[in-house]
Length: 281
Picture 1 (cartoon, rainbow, N blue to C red):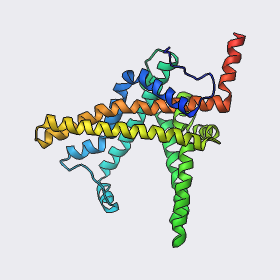
Picture 2 (cartoon, rainbow, N blue to C red; picture 1 turned 45 degrees about the vertical axis):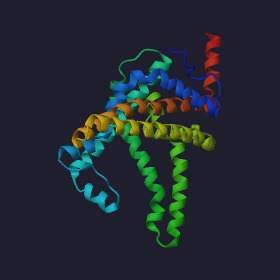
Picture 3 (cartoon, rainbow, N blue to C red; picture 1 turned 120 degrees about the vertical axis):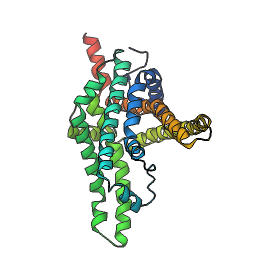
Picture 4 (cartoon, rainbow, N blue to C red; picture 1 turned 30 degrees about the horizontal axis):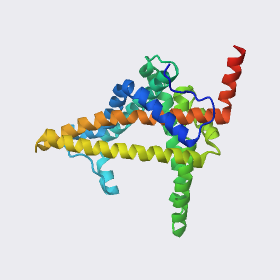
């Protein structure tokens, strides 16, 4: 077991949740790079497919461009396969991080994640259906009222995303089913919308900074390595994006684990249960 205080023994402040996230990231990132790297590559499958077919990389700036791209059924397959594989490797990263900070031993995370793929797909379907349902009224009603309905749907979407933000972590860590994971995440996050919004906003700012710096470094190194050759520069940039993306990805899992642990203490009395068990042991 590492010296990372996980799970926490008490309720944490916003700053302490973020501090715990950084601690988890520091002690786990090195051992999660392989899974994270494969996850980044999986997310790039549509671009890899496009380049393999001798086409330029997709740059959809309008709905018409997007529709033209998706007329290729094989591209749909690449998106679906890439999404599933990316979720699979992210789940393996999450499981490895949980093992490192709580048990200290690692192994078997990818196999465990593969077994949960049907549940992950089910969760993804529930999330998409929930998001789609928010915008159904706006799609059915026209006129000036549509703008108000879209605004209301966007506000509801923000609450929905925060409410289900722990669902995937619960599904992987606790082995719950898709519907049960969504329900439990909703229960745990109820009453903590603004607090969680602050945590996720700060984490997002950190990620944006990391991605900005990574993109700048990747662009500079690609230019140096390519030496004016566009093909070499593009290939170098893709390799660097994968490498830098692998460094950033474990931060998602670190935040997810820290937030879930704190919510369990707050809503389910995990700290009290642990103390009682220790006292009676």
